[in-house]
Amino acid sequence: MKADVTLDGDQLIATRHIDADPALVWEAFTTPEHLAAFWGGDHATVTSGSVTVDLRVGGTFQLETRGADGSRRPLRFRYEAVDAPSRLVLSESHTGLITEIRLEPSGKGTTVVVHQRKLPPELQTERARTGLAGILDRLDAVLEDLTTRDRSRTT
Image 1 (tube, helix red, strand yellow):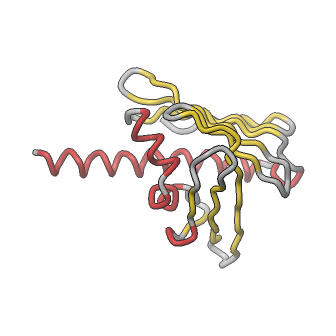
Image 2 (image 1 turned 90 degrees about the horizontal axis):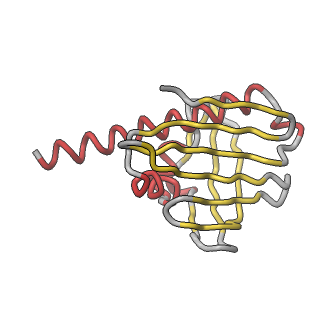
């Protein structure tokens, strides 16, 4: 299953089922090394040293993405809500972008819903839509690899 992402004016809404427990998905969204592994999706990389997480309301989450062309883009967000293990809300002061991440238990896994509001015009694009899909698809691959390695260690 791939991510389903809809672009509607100044909003992007992405949904993706992940075959992992909500607590593990929460850990992925709140731990620098996990964020570095999936945040760039298939269009950018993130060096783990660039990721910082101050997981509290008013705290910051920042990282730097690097495009295939060598371009660098620093991102900095403020945590507006931290409701472990089910909800994060992030704001980006430069553009006004608001990102809500919801983790909903679903069968033996988690449904991840990312709702971005107040997208600036430069992010109201097909590239932004496919980029967000790629991030969630990469999250699934990273967590699948992690759970497979954990299972092989215990057997």
